[in-house]
Amino acid sequence: MTVIGSIFWLIVTLGVLVTFHELGHFWVARRFGVKVLRFCVGFGKPIWSRYDKQGTEIAVAPIPLGGYVKLLDSRDCDVSQEDPRTVYNNIPIYQRMLIMVAGPAFNFILALVLYWLMFVVGKQEIIPTLGDPQGIMAEAGFESGDRLKELGGESIKTWSDVSLALITAGIDRRDIPVVVESESGMLKNKILPLSQVPSDVSEEHLIKYIGLSPWRIPAPAIMAELDETLPAAKAGLKRGDLITAINGQSVDDWYHLVELVSGIQQGPVNIVYERDGDSLQLSIKELANNPDDKKKKILGVRPQKPTEKDMNTLRSMYFLHSYGPLDAVGQAFAETAKITQKSLEMMWKLVTGRASVKNLSGPITIAQVANDSAQRGFSWYLSFLALVSLSLGIINLMPVPMLDGGQMLFLTFEKIKGAPLSERFEMRAQLVGMFLILSLMSVAFYNDILRSLS
Image (cartoon, rainbow, N blue to C red):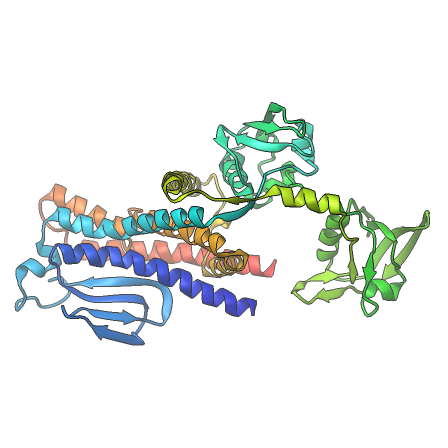
């Protein structure tokens, strides 16, 4: 069902974003009187189409990885019988430029609307309170219960804000000032020394390396329930046993236990545990497969139920991040500006080699994240959709042939030259652009496959 859900939400996501993007080109072209021959969502031979009153074919194709608007152009077909004012390459350059920029612009507009709706509906978030800081954070004086208020001068309200604020500073290995509110309510200024992070630590492992851990319900690795058909019970573990080590590695708590067990691919598994004050050992020949994720293993045990006090603490950390319809307008603009800035910073780091190409994601990752966000709730999916819409708009503005930005670059050269560029030059440039895009897509697919196998 996860695969089906991911495919479904990928089609929905790309369908909405591509349709809106092409609608921008379509709408502005119509405003300037240019004849639109086809408006197509998807690539390949159309599986459905119809014609509107102005003779435009509205079509849907089977490969949902893009779309296009085909305009009447003398370079593509015979236009001798057409009104010259309806031919794309006959209209003024500034109008052609506006037609090209309209697609990305509509993606930005869509992102604004989606963020506005997200803030109006409200998004269930968790207050960014630290659990048990480790590593660099512990050494810098951060303590359990500290609530993050500012990172690098940016106001922090949610854990999503924390990730955004840390990622670029982490890549740059730049120390970042932090304002925290202690459990007593006192504001404290600290410095998170990201310059101490070794260069070989990848961005995906940055958060774990610096020791950032959200607050979570305390859970010792005590066996509360055991499934008699699974390895733990069969090997002799009983309720009340406290696991202290697995394969020679100390176990801190239940969460650490789950992390260690999940990473074990094959037995035997040596377990040290305490029972009635005595330290005992046993060996499990083979762990069981996790029914929800075949790549991970399980012992077949469950933790103790949290206390009512811990549950009340957890509930107090959740809040509905929402605004009224008017206030949400300003928040939507601020969120769009912030995400755009972070996206541009990351793209520049990729281009200059300061960020790894492992950060590139393709359709597989997009499908998985789309499905996950949809499962978390409507507002989470709106946030994801807005993020991808902004990414699509930014990427299409890049001056690469085959993209809208590349077409705008051609138009700029035409304006400077005072005459259209040769078809031969444009064709060669398009081939270069296609090669670059296919190369990036190949890297993104490769990253997706590695993530799926890891």
